[in-house]
Image 1: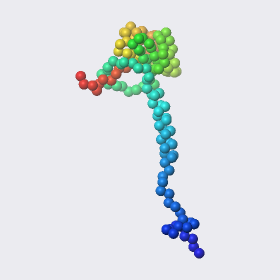
Image 2: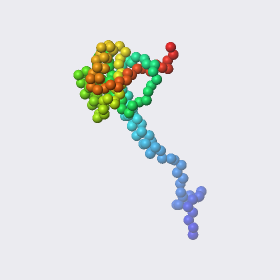
Image 3: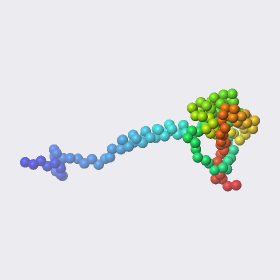
Image 4: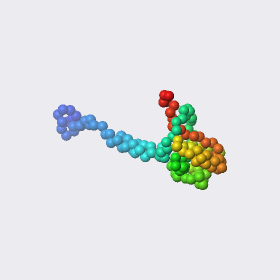
Length: 147
């Protein structure tokens, strides 16, 4: 006596075919990646809004750690996203770069186009007093626009 395991007759030993694909693990992985990118994207941008003047120079290679000083048109000073002032600017910059040597660190200054020149020079003098000699000015990229 032999048992029939499959076939059109059905019966006790009939094996049903599974035609559906389990996509639950794929959806789980995609949702985790989506959450990671949603959390990491705002951390990668500067949140202080500054009206930048246009720049026509070609962009340079990014250094490993970026430190921004943002100058608002009313004279307020920010180190990265943290408020500062001229009296504590050196200490705030040293805290922002960690244990790095300030003479090897490039500081990027983002100044509003309506900023008073005296306020800008006050920040530049304070940087030099604290040992920050490598300064880069950030401007809005207008190189793709036609004249």
